[in-house]
Length: 330
Length: 300
Image 1 (cartoon, chains in turn orange, green):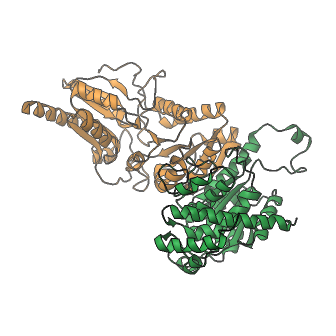
Image 2 (image 1 turned 90 degrees about the vertical axis):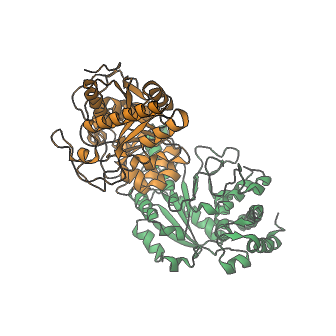
Image 3 (image 1 turned 180 degrees about the vertical axis):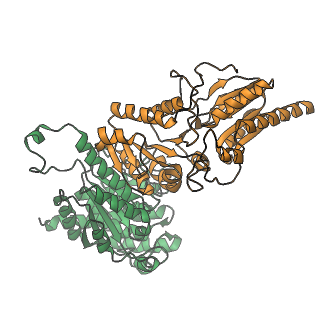
């Protein structure tokens, strides 16, 4: 059994959506400015809202461009709208509206974008490019929580932060609970789940579960691999990345999204500019996704993209080999 | 309620003064969106210098009426009004298009007190104005009722809105699908505190609006979307004032208002009118400016 840091206690799988719901309701009870902005795609804990806060629900229908701009206007008037839909729709479809009518003026809009790179819904909804097209936008904070606790804490932090935030809500499979209730979440701060000496896996979102499993598998083979949870995809925690490179000299990034424009590229840039170190990026390699509900019994898409713990094990070994080779050259 | 002749005459004179302010801005880089700016100057004059609630000493006054310039490339007209109101000194006109200037190439809420919306990407302004109108309704609904309201239910006494929301759209902008998303939204939420003004100057960049992509039948479209519609001559000051007053008086009818202002691209400068000038540059621009200065230069 690997030795984890403080605030880590692996538990049963729990839907992160539960954490988002809880934080939104607590936030709405405390702060009258919080408004649910719907785009005919439901809302986390919608029944509670319909029962308790019907006057604070705005429904724009399947019109994401209008939705994004109305959100900007509500924020301009002092409200805190939470815009909920699929990521391909509320940011992807309305990219220019988000840019022009939310980000240009740093309006205090919160966007929850559903679906990661896999799920039963298929190629249209599985937004592999979502992180990439969002990271290039100035003034936008991007959060990608890994489990139910982090989802709740990230939602809470998102509501407290003054400015535009995108929270990515991934779909299946339900990740195991990783953090304890007193986990101290901070926007822009990575959290070291496990320290290591041979290599570090920097994981975001649901890939954290796989990264932890990979570290345990590697420990059985006598390798001490660290795991760093990077919930905030923008701004990245540069200091934590540099520290991991200094300590272990080999970095593997793990993301359930395209490696182009995603976590892997961000980490690569930080390393190149500060402390070049061998790097392997694990993610989706420039292709679209497809249907494939992931359950404990079925993981076709994970196999397809090479995103299982076993695949990470291979990548970590490749990265350590790169490190050894570069030492030989020295 | 008829407006007296002296008010109409003084606003007409102000309009000409605003045109002069626009010429000054066009001169900075011998460039500007002359056609669409000239077509909307009269409406902007009526709005800013007479109709809306706006405090030049405090442009961020929470109860000010909101004005969204959705066709934000014609923000020169708004800048001219802000100078005339004393929000900015006249010298600012000469910094139009310059680095660090409050008079940016497209209206920018952060740079310019008095500007409510950072526009430029066409088709989004009506959504923003509708969002602000919705926010007004929400603020009224969420605040504790006043002593007056506890005695008089709202259906007996009609209250004025906290503020009204105005949006100026171009006619070519109506090609954007989002405008009609916003039209449905405003109608659904009964935004009778929202007024859209369409600068129907009949010309886009590539040619006549109704050739590029027909928008007609325009009034019928807005009516079908559940809006109250009125058509006016957008260069007749009396008509502009009358229709704006009417939209105020109709508050409480649960309908968003659409004013279709029939205008002329490049209005008032024959050189630009004849060319349906969209974006003027260099000598094309300066020829019009010289003509305009001669015509309106004596205005005080």
